[in-house]
Image 1 (cartoon, one colour):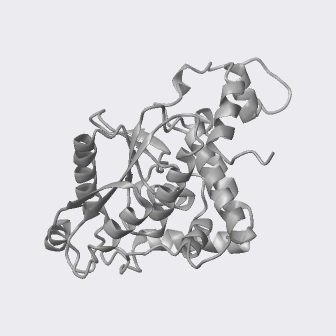
Image 2 (image 1 turned 135 degrees about the horizontal axis):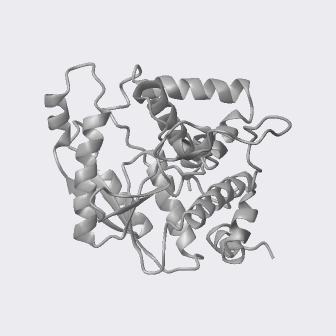
Length: 307
């Protein structure tokens, strides 16, 4: 934490919110099991620094034992301070691996000036990350994407890709060899930004994507920021909506068999296309006999008891 002395109450509350949100996401999606080796991808940005700190803190009181290894990909960007992250990792006493690959030159060679570099850059990074995870024996790959990243991706896919698709909190790689997790899936970016300042992380800017103000993601980010200012609660509602999908009320025939619905129905009063009853998360857990373990895991991976 930046500065000296006893942490302020506001800082402690902020840390508690982030750790609670991360603990709930880990428990809800069973991101980490006993004996897992979690490779945390640390880019040098606020999100990945916060992810690493949070996982190290949660490990101390988690109901399962897991190992954390920090990993950084040095993409050979001009001026990249290669000594910053190794020094930071050694200061906090975490295992780490630095991988050096000149993806910067590849991206600059393949992408015309002024065009968005994100797509190619992310594909190159993904291959190197998967390879490194295999070398380290990592059973989980943890990425620092937060709630706002996931919402931005949802709207990017709807506006520009014609798909309802976001970043999942947990996924399996196409070859079935790797599990990717996003423990900050429930964390708002504004809390992470405040936390990074309070912690005094040695932030390293990304000159590849950070210098592209006209990128589509920046446009969507600005739209969501405007909604958050003008319509308090809208972003929280959108985030909740991604966990409450009703396939029968959309139009994807691969998710719901519309063709097999009866062509004629008995007359009933009111709207025959009525909505199904809403089931709370606790009801859903109870119906599958999992509510006790579900609550216990969320508590143990979240904040410590106050009494």
